[in-house]
Amino acid sequence: MDTQVIIVGGSYAGLSAALMLGRALKKVVIIDKGVRRNIQAHESHSYLTRDGENPNEIARIAREEVRKYKTVSFLDDLVTTVKQNENKTFSVLTEKNGTLTAYKVVLAYGVKDEMLPIPGYTDCWGNTVFTCPYCHAYEFAQKTIGVLLSGDMLLSMIKLILQWSTSLVVFLNGGTINQEHENIISKLKIPIVRESVKEIAHQNGKVKHVVIGNGKTHDVDAILAVAPFHLNNSQIVTDLGLALSEPFKLINVDAFGKTNIKGVFAAGDCATFVAQMSVASALGATVGVIAHKELVEEEFAELIQNV
Image (tube, rainbow, N blue to C red; front, side):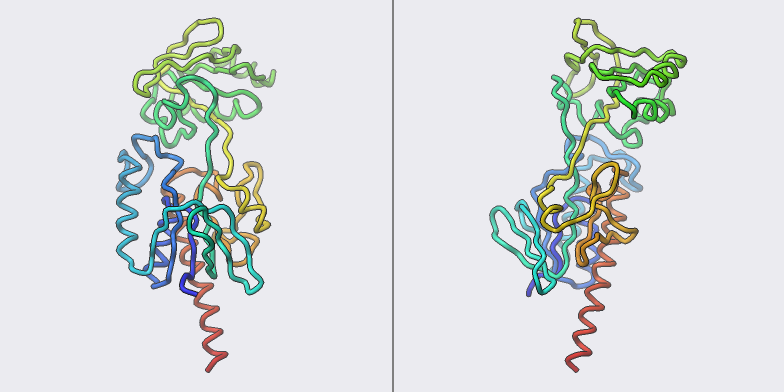
């Protein structure tokens, strides 16, 4: 079998795993369609030596670096599912290139954020509408930030975003709020807008104001929006019988990126809720090392058996 490891997803986690495996002279195929979670973001932050750079440029450089290793190849395709074979190998089914087989599989295909059906929301996503304060809030420190959220998570996000700004406006968007939480937020003199959000007015992706159902507008500089997200491919989880972690329903892994299925690893946003490029890269590198170690042990056992 030519391919030793197949990596599903070629963003920061997948590329980091490939880099480790390529430097270990292992034959690796990265299957990727080029759609990353942060593809709309203009800047990336909290990544040493690359703070403030465009994440698309960082990904381009990363691919170029990985391509230098001759045992690593790229396949522009979409994986539909992965199945375990009786001989402990794995079959990876793709849309355009049929079925590929490998001894190890690294799942690094991330998650998909669900865009709220509000005009302007998607246009501003990843820049002035964001879900990660550690990625984007610094640029709006002490400016007016809208918090587009309701339910039990609202208060915890208020506590967090107050570290960057005390000028907040809560938009429940027709949702509910815990009475105790509402009392606390009111004590902080943070306005709570209950009506549905009609539109996020913007100019070239920069938020200007929020328009609610009755036509009233609220000026904000940015919006923290905790929208639902889900794994990019749930069929892989089902067919392999992968365990999921709570509460976010991500692929459950140990400290080394191992799943409950031997030979299958996961790294990046599909396996952790800490959505940072640096974290994804670190987890990918870890998985690359551990997958290689498993291959070493198996190859050595076979070598001794045949001596």
